[in-house]
Image: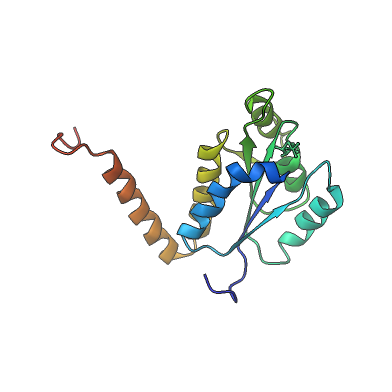
Length: 167
Ligand code: RP5
């Protein structure tokens, strides 16, 4: 990724404690060489930053926002309410309720304000990045080719040496 390239995916999270989970989204974006940025913009502790981020994202050229939060996880929904960009929500595993609270907070959006909600924790962060790459790939053939390579690697990973392949 060259420094001159415009940022396409924004990864935001509610606290530095979310980084352990959200770093997996960032790693996957790096793997696909997708220009990205990551920021802490809390719905509760820095609401002005969150509002500004959501309002300016489209103008700045971003195409997808990934938002991770835990507990009363309002960040993805609040961002989605202030942008027309697709927002992917990652429920971070909370200490008290293991992320079920985060999941329900993110997934139960009112009709009209969409957030694509992923699984709790690392798998959700990883898949949020992969979904963002798939969205970008609809108009970028080079990214689609990379996704096909990635899928082939996934297949290779589950193959047991000596076992029959397929049905
Ligand atoms: C949420 O509260 C954050 O997204 C985080 O998952 C959770 C706990 O934050 P800390 O108390 O660890 O900063 O806003």
